[in-house]
Length: 139
Image (tube, rainbow, N blue to C red; front, top):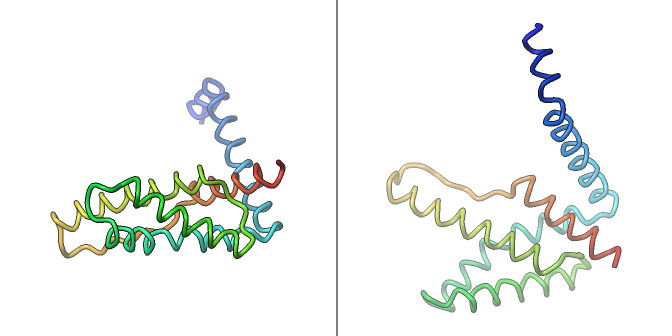
């Protein structure tokens, strides 16, 4: 028991940082739910894999900028049509995260074809998109 207390006293700043980060995450989620933007952000995030796939079909290999532009345009159009406030920078980060995850999934499927790999939004991704809502609605 005393080792645990010594650890806590020695690392109080780390524990405080973790606790404050967790409280910030909880407050962001509560704010998203109150604003009614949470479902819209999740819907946007869920569109990304299909849009990436469409962009891959339209713009063959080597046209990463054109693919990104296509996906961003489609997401912004959806966001505007559904009154979802989100910045282009945050959408770009979410797209890049899913592209990176897709690359990992593709490598895994080459090495282990029996495993099923699904891309699901992480809490961090949803929080990033939600934080965008907070900054765009306050400007």
